[in-house]
Length: 247
Ligand SMILES: NC(=O)c1ccc[n+]([C@@H]2O[C@H](COP(=O)([O-])OP(=O)(O)OC[C@H]3O[C@@H](n4cnc5c(N)ncnc54)[C@H](O)[C@@H]3O)[C@@H](O)[C@H]2O)c1
Image (cartoon, rainbow, N blue to C red; front, side, top):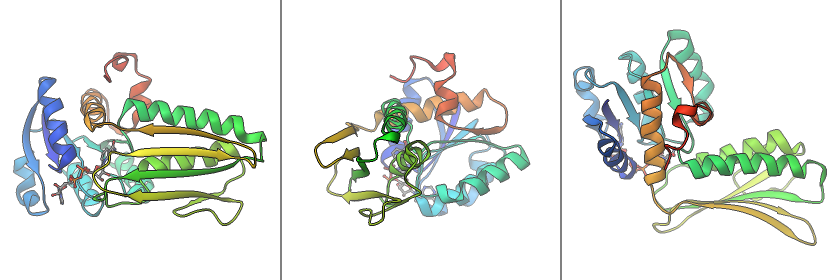
């Protein structure tokens, strides 16, 4: 598979290593707005574009990929408030998009655990739920896309929260997400249920970026073989062909 990389920062570089190790080639790399000046010719020969850039550039880049009819895997976070619009354009014009707030297998297992725990806590109203996330100081968006995903799943399954807020909750219907940006740490997400007497916590800590990169390259392989549409991790994780590959 020939891959164009949009965003050649920490993730772009990691994805290149994983892609080459899996026998793919990287045919072009965009790392700034200017790099896209000749995009019509630069990524013409690519089979797929993998987009890990910045919240401010991601929408433009997605639409350029739609314009050139290239399937696009999007890992950039901070744009999910526009997801419905992008989904609509994608469906309307027969384009192909794979997006995920988090491409790692471990985090997707953690999502499942979070949904099940929220359903278990549905009838135990003495437990107050909250989310805490810590990332490196360069992360632009806050809260993280992963924390938003966790929060939306809790809202759907717990039954007593209407909305999330990026601070400690002040009202009973709010789900608080507290974000910390420190040093060069890898991401940690904690979901906490506290009653007056005790506390239950589930925690996911990433140790490196490779898990995200493997998921993104597999997603590129996945959409390379699929018809137009909008895909995300649940599609791939439920496909037997991809079982066991996310190591
Ligand atoms: N979904 C996931 O699993 C996952 C995992 C890790 C990071 N992320 C997200 O991926 C994004 C990138 O993360 P990172 O750690 O590589 O960040 P980074 O800051 O190291 O890299 C971003 C790169 O994008 C480049 N860039 C700026 N404008 C651009 C443009 N118009 N077109 C193309 N590239 C441009 C920058 O020069 C920079 O090198 C962030 O939004 C981050 O939150 C997602």
